[in-house]
Image 1 (cartoon, rainbow, N blue to C red):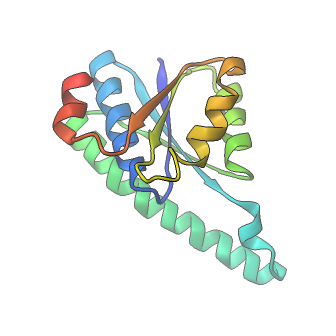
Image 2: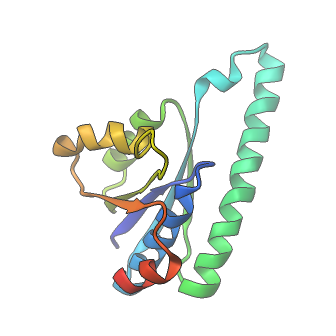
Image 3: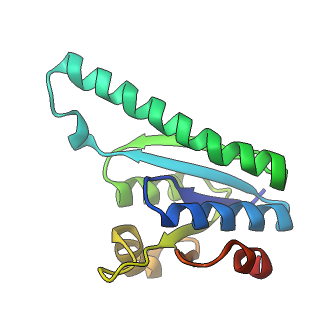
Length: 151
């Protein structure tokens, strides 16, 4: 089964990327793989404190994921899979793509502010020529109705 890989983070544009991935998966019989990356610099503390922070980050990710997962299951009949990795976001996204041969499309949400589309879109667009799969970039300000119409 072909999976749509979408990155879970705290950005506003993440919502449209999740919607797009779920809608496309529902319409094509595919799956959704949700990747959350925990940056290693978050845990540069004493061993005990770092471990507590790591567990708190995982708990936040699971809670955030469940909001999207419930909508995907209830409305789109897609059961998403959560993957949590630790490291630099771009490196971990590329590693996940290389390690899971079922991932067929990377879905990213583009930011809407004047600073540009966001660091992930910028960095991964530069390496898109060497990625083994296509990238779909979903505009962050696309309406829910427009997303439904194009998927």
